[in-house]
Image (cartoon, rainbow, N blue to C red; front, side, top):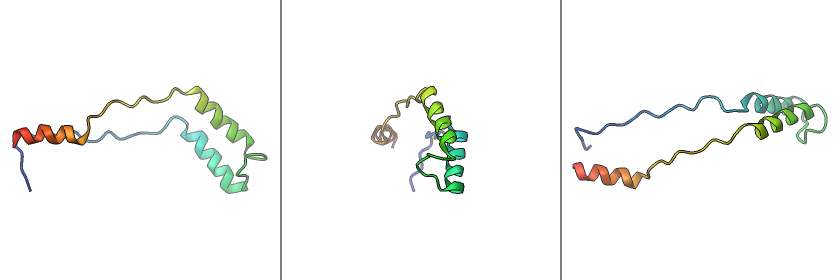
Length: 79
C-alpha cells in the first residue's frame, strides 16, 4: 500500500431526497396496490401529480468533475 503524506480526500456528499420523491412513491404504491400499471383508473391522479411535479421542477445541472486520470496525474507528481 502506498502512503502519501499530503493527500487529502473529501468525503462524498450524500444525496438527500429527490425533487418528486413523494409523488413517485405514491404512484408506485398505487400501482402495487391496484395493479393499474397504465394509470387509467385509480392511479390516474397520482400519475398526473407526478407529471406536474416533473414538469415544474428545474433539472439539476451536473457540476464538472475532473476525470480519475487527472487526479492520478496530480498524485503521480508527488510520488
